[in-house]
Length: 382
Image 1 (tube, rainbow, N blue to C red):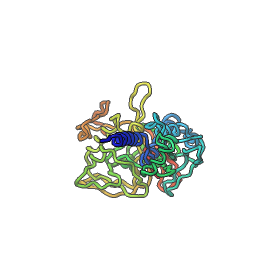
Image 2 (image 1 turned 180 degrees about the horizontal axis):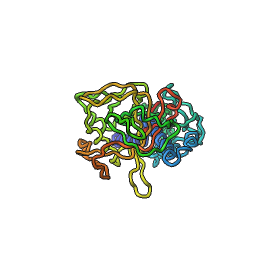
Image 3 (image 1 turned 135 degrees about the horizontal axis):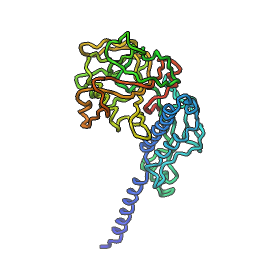
Image 4 (image 1 turned 45 degrees about the horizontal axis):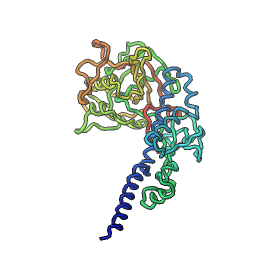
């Protein structure tokens, strides 16, 4: 029996099998390209946020210089490095950048302003709060490492959509993730964004305001599940310890807890002192490593209901307050025990339970200042 033909076909089969493996290894799919664009945009938005909040911490009076920088070099670098990071060895994805804000063949990154009210992105717009990233395959990826033959194979097999260049936009709109709401009196200091004011450490209380207290008699707070009603399948503790996603609450209603207990405060305390939770929004002393504060955006409601009984009341949110929590003191069992890792305040608080703040900036719903106020958590918007 002549086996020449069989041997030839066997060799051809092995070559094609190896080729298929190489193509699969070197090829960047449409889904990969889209996912890479999204991750890159989020990384860039995070870098924009870090630059803004570094200035808020060091010199808030010069914040405008950061938000009007339409180059945002660190954000572009973060986006590009994220895009090519997983594919650097074989150069499959590229994001050209020339530090301009026009999408061209030489530039696939822009920064600008995302208007959350109109849901519109303006490249080069100010104040800068967003980044746009477009990813594309390199020539090596388009041919899957095999020149013209590889490009033909990719298109015949349906692995590649011709000229697919996905675009993603990520922004840092002001949104709420704090699980406490504050009374409107907290904004009586007159500190309005873009002002961010340092204040003498102020204790927020869940008790009825004391009219004899000085200098801020009405600084009250209550726990909130934000826009989520607490159901039988979940608890407020689960929501706090599970790190709920940021939400747009301005002009809407928030669920305010009526129960008088301090269990949620212990959960928030545990989250504050857990170094792995929301670490980019925590401020540390560079010399000692001591936690100085935790930046959060809290909803300001029209009026806080009195603590009584149980359940939740729906209360309109009229403003946002960007605050730095300086410390939380809560006696009793450490919170967030369901996570398996609990954290308590490092200092002895005695019986002086409370939530303390030392920085504040308020902004009203429906104002242009709210549109300009930077948020704390990057989100994909397109």
